[in-house]
Length: 251
Length: 251
DNA sequence: CGCTTACTTGAGTCTGGTCAAACGGGGTGG
DNA sequence: CCACCCCGTTTGACCAGACTCAAGTAAGCG
Image (tube, rainbow over all chains, first blue to last red):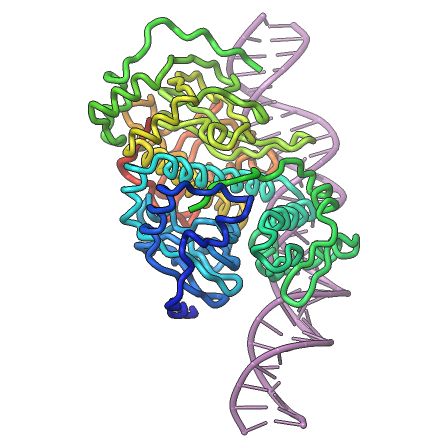
Protein backbone atom coordinates (compact mmCIF):
# COMPACT_ATOMS: atom_id res chain seq x y z
CA UNK A 1 0.00 0.00 0.00
CA UNK A 2 1.69 3.14 -1.22
CA UNK A 3 1.49 6.30 0.82
CA UNK A 4 -0.13 9.41 -0.53
CA UNK A 5 2.17 12.30 -1.30
CA UNK A 6 1.97 15.39 0.78
CA UNK A 7 -0.49 17.94 -0.52
CA UNK A 8 1.36 20.66 -2.34
CA UNK A 9 1.04 24.15 -0.94
CA UNK A 10 -0.36 25.66 -4.11
CA UNK A 11 -3.92 24.57 -4.78
CA UNK A 12 -6.32 25.15 -7.59
CA UNK A 13 -8.99 27.60 -6.56
CA UNK A 14 -12.49 26.43 -7.33
CA UNK A 15 -13.03 29.59 -9.34
CA UNK A 16 -10.28 28.48 -11.69
CA UNK A 17 -11.10 24.78 -11.58
CA UNK A 18 -10.16 23.28 -14.94
CA UNK A 19 -13.25 21.07 -14.85
CA UNK A 20 -15.63 23.98 -14.53
CA UNK A 21 -14.62 25.37 -17.85
CA UNK A 22 -15.46 22.21 -19.70
CA UNK A 23 -18.70 22.17 -21.60
CA UNK A 24 -19.24 18.64 -20.35
CA UNK A 25 -19.87 19.78 -16.80
CA UNK A 26 -22.59 22.05 -15.58
CA UNK A 27 -21.25 25.30 -14.18
CA UNK A 28 -21.97 26.73 -10.74
CA UNK A 29 -23.51 30.07 -9.93
CA UNK A 30 -21.67 32.41 -7.56
CA UNK A 31 -23.48 31.21 -4.45
CA UNK A 32 -22.82 27.55 -5.17
CA UNK A 33 -19.23 28.34 -5.97
CA UNK A 34 -18.84 30.04 -2.63
CA UNK A 35 -20.05 26.97 -0.84
CA UNK A 36 -17.89 24.57 -2.82
CA UNK A 37 -14.86 26.73 -2.08
CA UNK A 38 -15.54 26.46 1.63
CA UNK A 39 -16.44 22.80 1.33
CA UNK A 40 -13.08 22.00 -0.22
CA UNK A 41 -10.43 21.57 2.41
CA UNK A 42 -7.43 20.71 0.31
CA UNK A 43 -5.86 18.72 -2.42
CA UNK A 44 -4.05 15.43 -2.57
CA UNK A 45 -1.65 13.89 -5.05
CA UNK A 46 -1.49 10.13 -5.29
CA UNK A 47 0.83 7.65 -6.92
CA UNK A 48 -0.45 4.73 -8.95
CA UNK A 49 -1.46 1.93 -6.61
CA UNK A 50 -2.17 4.28 -3.70
CA UNK A 51 -5.29 3.51 -1.71
CA UNK A 52 -7.94 6.24 -1.50
CA UNK A 53 -10.40 4.19 0.51
CA UNK A 54 -10.08 0.86 2.21
CA UNK A 55 -12.99 -1.52 2.62
CA UNK A 56 -14.22 -1.42 6.21
CA UNK A 57 -12.74 2.00 6.95
CA UNK A 58 -14.70 5.04 8.01
CA UNK A 59 -13.25 8.00 6.19
CA UNK A 60 -13.99 11.59 7.10
CA UNK A 61 -13.47 12.72 3.53
CA UNK A 62 -14.92 12.81 0.07
CA UNK A 63 -12.90 13.28 -3.08
CA UNK A 64 -13.51 14.72 -6.49
CA UNK A 65 -10.97 13.69 -9.06
CA UNK A 66 -9.08 16.52 -10.71
CA UNK A 67 -6.85 14.31 -12.83
CA UNK A 68 -6.03 10.65 -13.22
CA UNK A 69 -7.90 7.37 -12.99
CA UNK A 70 -8.99 5.26 -10.04
CA UNK A 71 -11.06 2.12 -9.66
CA UNK A 72 -13.48 0.82 -7.07
CA UNK A 73 -13.33 -2.86 -6.13
CA UNK A 74 -14.24 -5.49 -3.60
CA UNK A 75 -12.32 -8.61 -2.64
CA UNK A 76 -13.46 -11.92 -1.24
CA UNK A 77 -11.55 -13.50 1.63
CA UNK A 78 -9.69 -15.87 -0.66
CA UNK A 79 -8.47 -13.02 -2.83
CA UNK A 80 -10.96 -13.10 -5.68
CA UNK A 81 -11.34 -9.50 -6.78
CA UNK A 82 -14.18 -7.75 -8.57
CA UNK A 83 -13.69 -4.30 -10.02
CA UNK A 84 -16.97 -2.40 -9.77
CA UNK A 85 -16.29 0.73 -11.76
CA UNK A 86 -13.64 3.19 -12.83
CA UNK A 87 -13.46 6.81 -11.72
CA UNK A 88 -12.22 9.63 -13.92
CA UNK A 89 -11.81 13.40 -13.55
CA UNK A 90 -15.01 14.99 -12.28
CA UNK A 91 -16.14 11.83 -10.49
CA UNK A 92 -17.00 11.88 -6.82
CA UNK A 93 -15.62 9.18 -4.53
CA UNK A 94 -16.70 8.19 -1.05
CA UNK A 95 -20.34 9.21 -1.11
CA UNK A 96 -21.52 5.74 -0.11
CA UNK A 97 -19.33 5.78 2.95
CA UNK A 98 -20.43 9.28 3.88
CA UNK A 99 -24.07 8.31 3.91
CA UNK A 100 -24.13 4.71 4.99
CA UNK A 101 -21.19 4.56 7.35
CA UNK A 102 -18.15 2.48 6.65
CA UNK A 103 -16.94 1.79 3.15
CA UNK A 104 -17.82 -1.58 1.74
CA UNK A 105 -15.42 -1.35 -1.14
CA UNK A 106 -11.89 -0.11 -1.71
CA UNK A 107 -10.65 2.52 -4.13
CA UNK A 108 -7.19 2.57 -5.63
CA UNK A 109 -5.34 4.94 -7.94
CA UNK A 110 -4.67 3.53 -11.40
CA UNK A 111 -2.50 6.41 -12.58
CA UNK A 112 -0.96 9.39 -10.83
CA UNK A 113 -3.89 11.39 -9.49
CA UNK A 114 -4.88 14.74 -8.08
CA UNK A 115 -8.04 14.99 -6.05
CA UNK A 116 -10.00 17.68 -4.21
CA UNK A 117 -10.65 16.84 -0.59
CA UNK A 118 -14.02 17.61 0.98
CA UNK A 119 -15.10 17.30 4.58
CA UNK A 120 -17.81 14.72 5.08
CA UNK A 121 -19.22 16.65 8.02
CA UNK A 122 -20.05 19.65 5.84
CA UNK A 123 -22.45 17.69 3.68
CA UNK A 124 -25.26 18.50 6.08
CA UNK A 125 -25.04 22.13 5.16
CA UNK A 126 -25.25 21.20 1.51
CA UNK A 127 -28.57 19.42 1.94
CA UNK A 128 -29.99 22.08 4.21
CA UNK A 129 -29.04 25.14 2.23
CA UNK A 130 -28.03 24.30 -1.31
CA UNK A 131 -30.96 22.58 -2.94
CA UNK A 132 -29.45 22.63 -6.40
CA UNK A 133 -26.32 20.89 -5.16
CA UNK A 134 -28.40 18.39 -3.21
CA UNK A 135 -30.10 17.61 -6.47
CA UNK A 136 -26.72 17.20 -8.14
CA UNK A 137 -25.58 14.82 -5.45
CA UNK A 138 -28.60 12.59 -5.98
CA UNK A 139 -28.06 12.87 -9.71
CA UNK A 140 -24.51 11.65 -9.30
CA UNK A 141 -25.61 8.70 -7.21
CA UNK A 142 -28.32 7.81 -9.70
CA UNK A 143 -25.82 7.93 -12.52
CA UNK A 144 -23.49 5.52 -10.76
CA UNK A 145 -26.45 3.24 -10.21
CA UNK A 146 -27.29 3.31 -13.89
CA UNK A 147 -23.73 2.42 -14.84
CA UNK A 148 -23.77 -0.49 -12.41
CA UNK A 149 -27.07 -1.68 -13.87
CA UNK A 150 -25.55 -1.85 -17.31
CA UNK A 151 -22.42 -3.49 -16.00
CA UNK A 152 -24.51 -6.11 -14.24
CA UNK A 153 -26.30 -6.88 -17.47
CA UNK A 154 -22.93 -7.22 -19.10
CA UNK A 155 -21.42 -9.66 -16.64
CA UNK A 156 -24.62 -11.60 -16.19
CA UNK A 157 -25.75 -12.03 -19.75
CA UNK A 158 -23.15 -11.04 -22.30
CA UNK A 159 -20.52 -13.41 -23.71
CA UNK A 160 -16.84 -12.86 -22.99
CA UNK A 161 -16.28 -11.10 -26.31
CA UNK A 162 -19.34 -8.87 -25.89
CA UNK A 163 -18.33 -8.04 -22.35
CA UNK A 164 -14.84 -7.03 -23.30
CA UNK A 165 -16.07 -4.93 -26.20
CA UNK A 166 -18.67 -3.29 -23.99
CA UNK A 167 -16.17 -2.39 -21.29
CA UNK A 168 -13.70 -0.86 -23.69
CA UNK A 169 -16.42 1.01 -25.57
CA UNK A 170 -17.77 2.30 -22.28
CA UNK A 171 -14.41 3.51 -21.00
CA UNK A 172 -13.62 4.99 -24.37
CA UNK A 173 -16.91 6.91 -24.32
CA UNK A 174 -16.17 8.22 -20.85
CA UNK A 175 -12.74 9.34 -21.93
CA UNK A 176 -14.17 11.01 -24.98
CA UNK A 177 -16.23 13.34 -22.80
CA UNK A 178 -13.06 14.55 -21.12
CA UNK A 179 -11.27 15.77 -24.19
CA UNK A 180 -8.97 18.56 -23.11
CA UNK A 181 -8.55 17.50 -19.49
CA UNK A 182 -6.84 14.21 -20.19
CA UNK A 183 -3.92 13.67 -22.51
CA UNK A 184 -5.00 11.10 -25.03
CA UNK A 185 -8.62 10.10 -25.29
CA UNK A 186 -7.71 6.89 -27.02
CA UNK A 187 -5.50 5.05 -24.56
CA UNK A 188 -6.95 3.36 -21.48
CA UNK A 189 -4.36 3.00 -18.69
CA UNK A 190 -5.39 -0.50 -17.62
CA UNK A 191 -3.75 -3.90 -17.58
CA UNK A 192 -5.37 -7.12 -18.71
CA UNK A 193 -5.62 -8.11 -15.07
CA UNK A 194 -7.91 -5.14 -14.50
CA UNK A 195 -10.02 -6.10 -17.48
CA UNK A 196 -10.28 -9.67 -16.21
CA UNK A 197 -11.33 -8.57 -12.74
CA UNK A 198 -13.88 -6.19 -14.19
CA UNK A 199 -15.44 -8.73 -16.52
CA UNK A 200 -15.46 -11.61 -14.09
CA UNK A 201 -13.19 -13.68 -16.33
CA UNK A 202 -9.85 -15.37 -15.78
CA UNK A 203 -6.72 -13.58 -16.88
CA UNK A 204 -5.90 -16.21 -19.48
CA UNK A 205 -9.31 -16.15 -21.06
CA UNK A 206 -9.34 -12.37 -21.01
CA UNK A 207 -6.08 -12.35 -22.89
CA UNK A 208 -7.46 -14.63 -25.57
CA UNK A 209 -10.62 -12.57 -25.84
CA UNK A 210 -8.74 -9.30 -26.18
CA UNK A 211 -6.59 -10.93 -28.82
CA UNK A 212 -9.69 -11.48 -30.93
CA UNK A 213 -10.52 -7.80 -30.67
CA UNK A 214 -6.94 -6.93 -31.62
CA UNK A 215 -7.03 -9.27 -34.58
CA UNK A 216 -10.21 -7.59 -35.78
CA UNK A 217 -8.36 -4.30 -35.68
CA UNK A 218 -10.66 -2.75 -33.09
CA UNK A 219 -7.98 -2.21 -30.47
CA UNK A 220 -4.26 -2.46 -30.05
CA UNK A 221 -2.76 -3.62 -26.80
CA UNK A 222 0.35 -1.89 -25.75
CA UNK A 223 2.71 -1.48 -22.89
CA UNK A 224 0.27 -1.16 -20.01
CA UNK A 225 -2.78 0.09 -21.75
CA UNK A 226 -5.30 -0.38 -24.46
CA UNK A 227 -5.47 1.80 -27.51
CA UNK A 228 -8.96 2.16 -28.95
CA UNK A 229 -8.83 2.00 -32.73
CA UNK A 230 -12.50 1.70 -33.62
CA UNK A 231 -14.93 2.61 -30.89
CA UNK A 232 -17.88 2.12 -33.21
CA UNK A 233 -16.76 -1.39 -33.97
CA UNK A 234 -16.55 -2.17 -30.28
CA UNK A 235 -20.00 -0.78 -29.70
CA UNK A 236 -21.31 -2.98 -32.45
CA UNK A 237 -19.73 -6.13 -31.07
CA UNK A 238 -21.18 -5.30 -27.66
CA UNK A 239 -24.63 -4.58 -29.08
CA UNK A 240 -24.61 -1.26 -27.30
CA UNK A 241 -26.92 1.60 -28.17
CA UNK A 242 -27.32 3.94 -25.23
CA UNK A 243 -25.05 6.85 -24.77
CA UNK A 244 -23.97 8.57 -21.62
CA UNK A 245 -25.81 11.68 -20.48
CA UNK A 246 -24.48 14.89 -22.00
CA UNK A 247 -23.86 17.82 -19.71
CA UNK A 248 -23.62 16.69 -16.14
CA UNK A 249 -23.14 18.07 -12.64
CA UNK A 250 -20.14 17.53 -10.43
CA UNK A 251 -18.89 18.84 -7.17
CA UNK B 1 -48.35 -6.75 -20.34
CA UNK B 2 -51.04 -6.66 -17.68
CA UNK B 3 -52.91 -3.45 -17.04
CA UNK B 4 -52.81 -1.77 -13.68
CA UNK B 5 -56.00 -1.85 -11.70
CA UNK B 6 -57.84 1.39 -11.06
CA UNK B 7 -56.76 3.14 -7.89
CA UNK B 8 -59.29 2.50 -5.20
CA UNK B 9 -61.06 5.57 -3.81
CA UNK B 10 -59.99 4.98 -0.22
CA UNK B 11 -56.33 5.69 0.31
CA UNK B 12 -53.98 5.34 3.21
CA UNK B 13 -53.20 8.73 4.66
CA UNK B 14 -49.52 9.33 5.17
CA UNK B 15 -50.20 10.02 8.83
CA UNK B 16 -51.43 6.46 9.21
CA UNK B 17 -48.94 4.88 6.84
CA UNK B 18 -48.26 1.34 8.03
CA UNK B 19 -44.59 1.70 7.13
CA UNK B 20 -44.10 4.74 9.36
CA UNK B 21 -44.97 2.77 12.46
CA UNK B 22 -42.26 0.21 11.84
CA UNK B 23 -39.13 0.52 13.87
CA UNK B 24 -37.17 -0.33 10.73
CA UNK B 25 -37.97 2.98 9.09
CA UNK B 26 -37.06 6.41 10.32
CA UNK B 27 -40.12 8.46 11.18
CA UNK B 28 -40.96 11.92 9.83
CA UNK B 29 -41.50 15.08 11.79
CA UNK B 30 -44.71 17.04 11.24
CA UNK B 31 -43.26 19.34 8.60
CA UNK B 32 -41.85 16.51 6.56
CA UNK B 33 -45.07 14.63 6.89
CA UNK B 34 -46.97 17.57 5.52
CA UNK B 35 -44.79 17.67 2.48
CA UNK B 36 -45.00 13.95 1.84
CA UNK B 37 -48.78 14.14 2.10
CA UNK B 38 -48.87 16.80 -0.62
CA UNK B 39 -46.23 15.01 -2.63
CA UNK B 40 -48.32 11.86 -2.77
CA UNK B 41 -50.90 12.07 -5.50
CA UNK B 42 -52.56 8.70 -5.18
CA UNK B 43 -52.29 4.97 -4.90
CA UNK B 44 -52.14 2.15 -7.36
CA UNK B 45 -52.88 -1.55 -7.11
CA UNK B 46 -51.07 -3.87 -9.47
CA UNK B 47 -51.44 -7.51 -10.44
CA UNK B 48 -48.47 -9.83 -10.65
CA UNK B 49 -46.74 -9.34 -13.98
CA UNK B 50 -47.93 -5.76 -14.36
CA UNK B 51 -45.36 -3.30 -15.65
CA UNK B 52 -44.52 -0.32 -13.42
CA UNK B 53 -41.85 1.09 -15.71
CA UNK B 54 -40.83 0.19 -19.21
CA UNK B 55 -37.28 0.59 -20.47
CA UNK B 56 -37.08 3.64 -22.70
CA UNK B 57 -40.19 5.30 -21.28
CA UNK B 58 -40.28 8.69 -19.60
CA UNK B 59 -42.58 8.38 -16.64
CA UNK B 60 -43.93 11.38 -14.74
CA UNK B 61 -44.16 9.38 -11.53
CA UNK B 62 -42.24 7.86 -8.69
CA UNK B 63 -43.52 5.02 -6.55
CA UNK B 64 -42.98 3.85 -3.02
CA UNK B 65 -44.07 0.30 -2.40
CA UNK B 66 -46.71 -0.15 0.29
CA UNK B 67 -47.04 -3.89 -0.15
CA UNK B 68 -45.84 -6.61 -2.49
CA UNK B 69 -42.67 -7.36 -4.44
CA UNK B 70 -41.35 -6.02 -7.74
CA UNK B 71 -38.13 -6.50 -9.66
CA UNK B 72 -35.98 -4.29 -11.86
CA UNK B 73 -34.48 -5.80 -15.01
CA UNK B 74 -32.92 -5.13 -18.39
CA UNK B 75 -33.19 -7.18 -21.54
CA UNK B 76 -30.87 -7.52 -24.51
CA UNK B 77 -32.29 -7.43 -28.03
CA UNK B 78 -32.23 -11.19 -28.36
CA UNK B 79 -34.21 -11.67 -25.18
CA UNK B 80 -31.47 -12.37 -22.66
CA UNK B 81 -32.70 -10.90 -19.40
CA UNK B 82 -30.80 -9.71 -16.34
CA UNK B 83 -32.63 -9.00 -13.11
CA UNK B 84 -30.87 -6.14 -11.33
CA UNK B 85 -32.57 -6.07 -7.96
CA UNK B 86 -35.80 -6.73 -6.12
CA UNK B 87 -37.99 -4.04 -4.56
CA UNK B 88 -39.97 -4.55 -1.35
CA UNK B 89 -42.26 -2.43 0.80
CA UNK B 90 -40.64 0.90 1.64
CA UNK B 91 -38.51 0.88 -1.51
CA UNK B 92 -38.58 3.79 -3.93
CA UNK B 93 -38.89 3.12 -7.66
CA UNK B 94 -38.24 5.42 -10.59
CA UNK B 95 -35.65 7.75 -9.11
CA UNK B 96 -33.15 7.06 -11.87
CA UNK B 97 -35.66 8.03 -14.51
CA UNK B 98 -36.66 11.15 -12.62
CA UNK B 99 -33.13 12.44 -12.51
CA UNK B 100 -31.51 11.18 -15.66
CA UNK B 101 -34.41 11.20 -18.08
CA UNK B 102 -35.80 8.06 -19.61
CA UNK B 103 -35.74 4.75 -17.80
CA UNK B 104 -33.01 2.38 -18.85
CA UNK B 105 -34.53 -0.61 -17.15
CA UNK B 106 -38.00 -2.04 -16.66
CA UNK B 107 -39.83 -2.80 -13.42
CA UNK B 108 -42.46 -5.48 -13.06
CA UNK B 109 -44.69 -6.62 -10.21
CA UNK B 110 -43.82 -10.02 -8.81
CA UNK B 111 -46.83 -10.30 -6.52
CA UNK B 112 -49.99 -8.23 -6.11
CA UNK B 113 -48.80 -4.77 -5.11
CA UNK B 114 -49.93 -1.48 -3.69
CA UNK B 115 -47.82 1.59 -4.31
CA UNK B 116 -47.92 5.28 -3.43
CA UNK B 117 -47.72 7.53 -6.44
CA UNK B 118 -45.59 10.69 -6.35
CA UNK B 119 -45.29 13.43 -8.92
CA UNK B 120 -41.84 13.67 -10.42
CA UNK B 121 -42.25 17.41 -10.93
CA UNK B 122 -42.57 18.05 -7.20
CA UNK B 123 -39.12 16.70 -6.44
CA UNK B 124 -37.67 20.15 -7.03
CA UNK B 125 -39.48 21.45 -3.98
CA UNK B 126 -38.04 18.60 -1.95
CA UNK B 127 -34.46 19.55 -2.74
CA UNK B 128 -35.08 23.25 -2.30
CA UNK B 129 -36.97 23.16 0.95
CA UNK B 130 -36.65 19.84 2.72
CA UNK B 131 -32.99 19.25 3.36
CA UNK B 132 -33.53 16.22 5.54
CA UNK B 133 -35.56 14.53 2.83
CA UNK B 134 -32.99 15.48 0.22
CA UNK B 135 -30.48 13.71 2.40
CA UNK B 136 -32.75 10.69 2.59
CA UNK B 137 -33.10 10.59 -1.16
CA UNK B 138 -29.34 10.50 -1.63
CA UNK B 139 -29.15 7.91 1.11
CA UNK B 140 -31.61 5.73 -0.75
CA UNK B 141 -29.66 6.02 -3.97
CA UNK B 142 -26.40 5.21 -2.20
CA UNK B 143 -27.98 2.15 -0.63
CA UNK B 144 -29.10 0.83 -3.99
CA UNK B 145 -25.60 1.41 -5.27
CA UNK B 146 -24.14 -0.59 -2.41
CA UNK B 147 -26.50 -3.47 -3.09
CA UNK B 148 -25.53 -3.47 -6.74
CA UNK B 149 -21.85 -3.46 -5.79
CA UNK B 150 -22.32 -6.60 -3.77
CA UNK B 151 -24.41 -8.19 -6.46
CA UNK B 152 -21.73 -7.44 -9.01
CA UNK B 153 -19.14 -9.13 -6.84
CA UNK B 154 -21.47 -12.08 -6.61
CA UNK B 155 -22.05 -12.56 -10.31
CA UNK B 156 -18.50 -11.75 -11.25
CA UNK B 157 -16.56 -13.77 -8.74
CA UNK B 158 -18.68 -16.22 -6.78
CA UNK B 159 -19.41 -19.78 -7.90
CA UNK B 160 -22.92 -20.82 -8.83
CA UNK B 161 -23.58 -22.32 -5.43
CA UNK B 162 -22.23 -19.30 -3.58
CA UNK B 163 -24.22 -16.96 -5.78
CA UNK B 164 -27.45 -18.78 -5.16
CA UNK B 165 -26.85 -18.93 -1.43
CA UNK B 166 -25.95 -15.25 -1.36
CA UNK B 167 -29.08 -14.19 -3.23
CA UNK B 168 -31.40 -16.18 -1.02
CA UNK B 169 -29.67 -15.03 2.14
CA UNK B 170 -29.87 -11.44 0.94
CA UNK B 171 -33.56 -11.59 0.12
CA UNK B 172 -34.24 -13.40 3.34
CA UNK B 173 -32.44 -10.66 5.28
CA UNK B 174 -34.46 -7.99 3.53
CA UNK B 175 -37.70 -9.78 4.34
CA UNK B 176 -36.63 -10.16 7.92
CA UNK B 177 -36.53 -6.38 8.33
CA UNK B 178 -40.16 -6.18 7.26
CA UNK B 179 -41.60 -8.43 9.89
CA UNK B 180 -45.16 -7.32 10.49
CA UNK B 181 -45.76 -5.70 7.13
CA UNK B 182 -45.41 -8.84 5.07
CA UNK B 183 -47.10 -12.13 5.78
CA UNK B 184 -44.38 -14.70 6.08
CA UNK B 185 -40.76 -13.64 6.38
CA UNK B 186 -39.56 -17.04 5.27
CA UNK B 187 -41.06 -17.53 1.82
CA UNK B 188 -39.67 -15.68 -1.20
CA UNK B 189 -42.25 -15.32 -3.99
CA UNK B 190 -39.88 -16.03 -6.86
CA UNK B 191 -39.59 -18.72 -9.50
CA UNK B 192 -36.39 -20.46 -10.51
CA UNK B 193 -36.48 -18.47 -13.73
CA UNK B 194 -36.13 -15.30 -11.66
CA UNK B 195 -33.24 -16.78 -9.75
CA UNK B 196 -31.54 -17.80 -12.98
CA UNK B 197 -31.94 -14.36 -14.51
CA UNK B 198 -30.64 -12.73 -11.34
CA UNK B 199 -27.58 -14.92 -11.04
CA UNK B 200 -26.66 -14.88 -14.70
CA UNK B 201 -27.08 -18.65 -14.98
CA UNK B 202 -29.18 -20.88 -17.19
CA UNK B 203 -32.46 -22.18 -15.85
CA UNK B 204 -31.29 -25.77 -15.93
CA UNK B 205 -28.11 -25.10 -14.06
CA UNK B 206 -29.94 -22.95 -11.55
CA UNK B 207 -32.29 -25.81 -10.87
CA UNK B 208 -29.42 -28.18 -10.20
CA UNK B 209 -27.72 -25.65 -7.97
CA UNK B 210 -30.83 -24.98 -5.92
CA UNK B 211 -31.27 -28.71 -5.55
CA UNK B 212 -27.95 -28.88 -3.78
CA UNK B 213 -29.13 -26.26 -1.32
CA UNK B 214 -32.36 -28.18 -0.82
CA UNK B 215 -30.48 -31.41 -0.25
CA UNK B 216 -28.40 -29.67 2.40
CA UNK B 217 -31.61 -28.73 4.14
CA UNK B 218 -31.01 -24.98 3.80
CA UNK B 219 -34.09 -24.26 1.72
CA UNK B 220 -37.19 -26.00 0.48
CA UNK B 221 -38.53 -25.18 -2.95
CA UNK B 222 -42.25 -25.07 -3.18
CA UNK B 223 -45.07 -24.10 -5.44
CA UNK B 224 -43.78 -20.78 -6.76
CA UNK B 225 -41.50 -19.76 -4.05
CA UNK B 226 -38.53 -20.57 -1.91
CA UNK B 227 -38.83 -21.32 1.76
CA UNK B 228 -35.78 -20.35 3.78
CA UNK B 229 -35.01 -23.01 6.34
CA UNK B 230 -31.58 -21.95 7.55
CA UNK B 231 -30.59 -18.41 6.72
CA UNK B 232 -27.36 -18.77 8.67
CA UNK B 233 -26.39 -21.79 6.64
CA UNK B 234 -26.96 -19.87 3.44
CA UNK B 235 -24.88 -16.98 4.68
CA UNK B 236 -22.09 -19.40 5.47
CA UNK B 237 -22.16 -21.02 2.04
CA UNK B 238 -22.08 -17.56 0.47
CA UNK B 239 -19.25 -16.40 2.69
CA UNK B 240 -21.28 -13.36 3.65
CA UNK B 241 -20.56 -11.19 6.64
CA UNK B 242 -22.00 -7.73 6.19
CA UNK B 243 -25.47 -6.95 7.32
CA UNK B 244 -27.92 -4.43 5.96
CA UNK B 245 -28.18 -1.03 7.63
CA UNK B 246 -30.57 -0.93 10.55
CA UNK B 247 -33.01 1.93 10.74
CA UNK B 248 -33.42 3.55 7.37
CA UNK B 249 -35.25 6.40 5.66
CA UNK B 250 -37.98 6.07 3.08
CA UNK B 251 -40.41 8.37 1.31
C1' DC C 1 -59.63 -32.73 -20.30
C1' DG C 2 -56.28 -30.42 -22.73
C1' DC C 3 -53.21 -26.39 -22.19
C1' DT C 4 -49.88 -23.79 -19.88
C1' DT C 5 -46.45 -22.85 -16.43
C1' DA C 6 -42.92 -24.38 -13.30
C1' DC C 7 -39.86 -27.71 -11.97
C1' DT C 8 -36.81 -32.00 -12.89
C1' DT C 9 -33.47 -34.84 -14.90
C1' DG C 10 -30.17 -36.87 -18.23
C1' DA C 11 -26.85 -36.61 -22.15
C1' DG C 12 -23.66 -34.35 -24.81
C1' DT C 13 -21.23 -29.98 -25.95
C1' DC C 14 -18.64 -25.86 -25.37
C1' DT C 15 -17.19 -21.74 -23.12
C1' DG C 16 -14.25 -20.45 -20.03
C1' DG C 17 -11.03 -22.05 -16.08
C1' DT C 18 -6.60 -24.06 -14.44
C1' DC C 19 -1.92 -25.35 -14.95
C1' DA C 20 2.37 -24.65 -16.95
C1' DA C 21 5.78 -22.38 -19.41
C1' DA C 22 7.94 -18.82 -21.87
C1' DC C 23 8.99 -14.00 -23.51
C1' DG C 24 10.20 -9.11 -23.25
C1' DG C 25 11.01 -4.85 -20.96
C1' DG C 26 12.32 -2.19 -17.00
C1' DG C 27 14.46 -1.80 -12.70
C1' DT C 28 18.17 -3.01 -9.40
C1' DG C 29 21.98 -4.65 -6.94
C1' DG C 30 26.45 -6.80 -7.45
C1' DC D 1 27.68 -3.58 -17.39
C1' DC D 2 25.31 -7.59 -16.57
C1' DA D 3 22.60 -11.01 -14.17
C1' DC D 4 18.47 -11.42 -12.09
C1' DC D 5 13.88 -10.65 -11.05
C1' DC D 6 9.35 -9.00 -11.40
C1' DC D 7 5.43 -7.74 -13.92
C1' DG D 8 2.50 -7.99 -17.73
C1' DT D 9 1.50 -10.56 -21.70
C1' DT D 10 1.18 -14.71 -24.54
C1' DT D 11 0.33 -19.53 -25.79
C1' DG D 12 -0.70 -24.51 -25.47
C1' DA D 13 -2.79 -28.50 -23.22
C1' DC D 14 -6.13 -30.21 -20.50
C1' DC D 15 -10.18 -29.94 -17.38
C1' DA D 16 -14.68 -28.68 -15.54
C1' DG D 17 -18.47 -25.82 -14.68
C1' DA D 18 -22.19 -24.23 -17.06
C1' DC D 19 -25.03 -24.36 -21.40
C1' DT D 20 -28.18 -26.52 -24.76
C1' DC D 21 -31.25 -29.90 -26.18
C1' DA D 22 -34.65 -32.98 -25.03
C1' DA D 23 -38.09 -35.11 -22.51
C1' DG D 24 -40.97 -35.91 -18.70
C1' DT D 25 -43.72 -34.79 -14.31
C1' DA D 26 -46.90 -32.19 -11.58
C1' DA D 27 -50.08 -28.61 -10.49
C1' DG D 28 -53.42 -25.03 -11.87
C1' DC D 29 -56.97 -23.36 -14.95
C1' DG D 30 -60.53 -22.56 -18.50
